[in-house]
Image 1: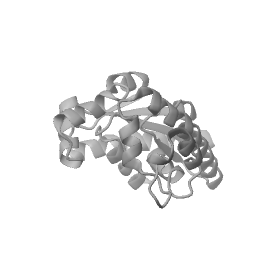
Image 2 (image 1 turned 135 degrees about the horizontal axis):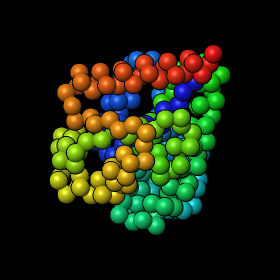
Image 3 (image 1 turned 120 degrees about the vertical axis):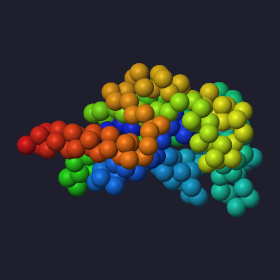
Length: 204
C-alpha cells in the first residue's frame, strides 16, 4: 500500500486532483470531512471548543456556530492556535485509524487530502507528498467565482496560510493545476499508475 499526502493552498485545485485520484480507484481520506465530523452535533471536539471559546460560538440548539467561530479565529493567531490544538490531534488520530482500516481492507493507493498537511505534521503518515499549486491570480479568480469573495477577502485567505511556494518546496511532487483539464487529468493518471506499480511491488 502506498500513502499519498496531498496538500495545496486555498483554491489551488487540490480537491479536483483528489477527485481524479478517487475516480482512478484511490481511497481518499478527507481531512476537512473528518474535521466537520468532529464539530458536527455531538462531535468529540465540541466540549473543548465550548470550554475554550464559550457559549457565544454555539447556536441555541447546541450546534456549533461556524460563522461565529470563524470570525473569532480569522486574523487572530492565538485563537486559531487554540482551535488547532483542539482539532488537529483528533484529525491526525482519525487519519491514522483510516489508514489502518485501508491496510486491513487491502487498498493499494490511499490519498490523505489534507490542506494543512505540513502544519499539522501529517506528512509523516505519507510515503509521497504532493502539492497542488496555481498562480496567486488564479487562486483569487477561483475564490471570487466559487465563494463570491472580494479580491481583498481572497488575498486575506491566501495570506493566512503557509505560502504555497513553501508547501511546494517541502513536497516530493508539485502539480500545477492551472492547465486545461484534460492535461491535468493525464498528469494525474500517469502519477497514479506509477504509484500503483510501486504499491504492487511493495506488496510482493
